[in-house]
Image 1 (tube, rainbow, N blue to C red):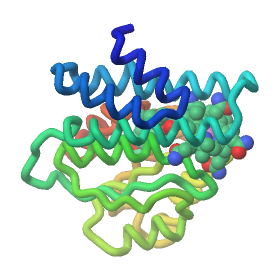
Image 2 (spheres, protein in one colour):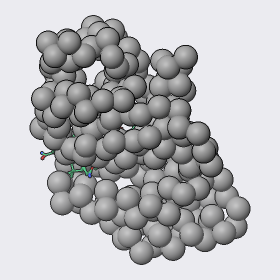
Image 3 (cartoon, rainbow, N blue to C red):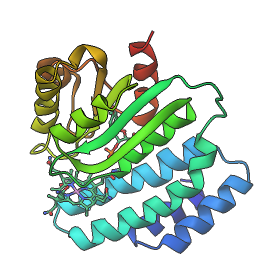
Amino acid sequence: MEKGIQLIFDGILEGDSDVVSENVSTLLEAGVEPKKILDEGLIAAMEKVGQLFESGDFFVPEMLIAARAMKAGLELLKPRLMEAEVESKGKVVIGTVKGDLHDIGKNLVAVMLEGAGFDIVDLGVDIDADQFVEAVKAGGVDVLAMSALLTTTMPGMEATIAALETAGLRDDVKVIIGGAPVTQKFADEIGADGFASDAGLAVTVTKSLLQ
Ligand code: B1M
């Protein structure tokens, strides 16, 4: 692994936002691709954090400070991940489902969609079916995007689709879902229109749903 990327990786594991920010800035100035820094530094480190949590070497506080350090790096990458699209490609309402506080992946999807020219309404985390439905009711929404990181919160996606149906809004919006435990099979089972396994694919799938 390249030295600067290794320092970012280690900085996230140690929860050191300053080291992460410094090295992201240095690599960007040196012309390293933002996508490389994101994939090999930031996202790889969060995967490692997950493994350390599973093995009992990390606890929630360590996950939390690692997430903070990752977000510090992501803030610096954000402008560089966004392409300069002028014309709006459509309006996307996005949120993490009820009971789920994980927002890093959701934020990344929002950044990439915004960069690709979509208007984003980010509802945040812990969003229940009624809140999603209210946001769609507000009008002009082309896509409803839901993220879940916990197997226990995935049913919130199905509940939201059911609530859209009850409200008579299901045909007005395309629904795309994602998050580490979410699969294409689950998307098919609950009647979502699209699934993406990462933020880049979320853009591709969202664009294809609106064609
Ligand atoms: Co939690 N956590 N966490 N956590 N956490 C996981 C998800 C876990 C897999 C860790 C593990 O055990 N290995 C595990 C879930 C197990 C399961 O359900 N199968 C877990 C657990 C158990 C928990 C708690 C229950 C722990 C506890 O309290 N005992 C608790 C739950 C709190 C809650 O939500 N109610 C909890 C808490 C937390 C923190 C708050 C400490 C923190 C989150 C901070 C934050 O987000 N602000 C945290 C973190 C950081 C993680 C891990 C380590 C990293 C998640 C992350 O940010 N990844 C995670 C382990 C892991 O995933 N490897 C873990 C980086 C991010 C870029 O990836 O979010 O997957 P991801 O997003 C990707 C794709 O999934 C996709 O694109 C993104 C970019 O490519 N994607 C979409 C995401 N959303 C999408 C939407 C789309 C399309 C694509 O369309 C709409």
